Figure 1 (cartoon, rainbow, N blue to C red):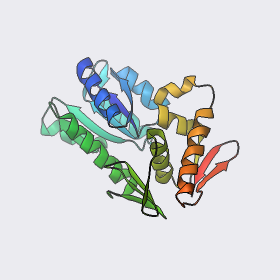
Figure 2: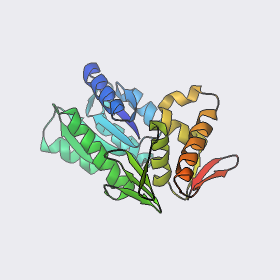
Figure 3: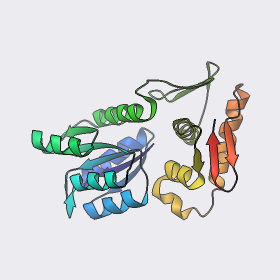
Figure 4: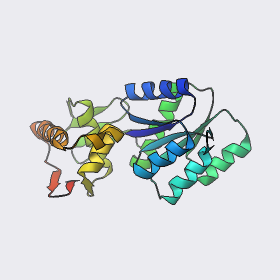
Length: 223
């Protein structure tokens, strides 16, 4: 899952990024309001962690921009301000959660995971698609109740496909989801073909159906 961290304090920003990347998230960062607006305008994210107090603007205005863009990203506000007014303002604008500094990174991780489950999978602790079962907490994948071993990218691909089942997903959307903003410099989608080929092979070897269908000239459809 792809997360944007909007935080002007370098040490906290880097700590959040390193921790979440260790948890398997693809992370991008913005250090001020202008950079945040550029990011949310040009890229899509699964979750946005935003400080309220930013250079050149407010995190609340970032939320307003996200809503004007009809973004589906989950939004968690992090702020040193623990006032009821700030919390209500953020939540009324469309934020999903509010975390007061200082906080434990493990708590932020838990809230992000809970938010993504609510948004993508109706809050379920496991995700099922016919014979496939995914348990996000342990990143376990079962096919016909038999565990299969996936790489990190293959796991992210599968969860993204299931979350977008029966929809056409473009190759650029897949690349952005798996590699963040850096995919712009790739120049080729060969790396996507390789991961999809390997994911398909592992699921079929475990007795699963081939749900990944190529939509020529566009991308893929799962289901």
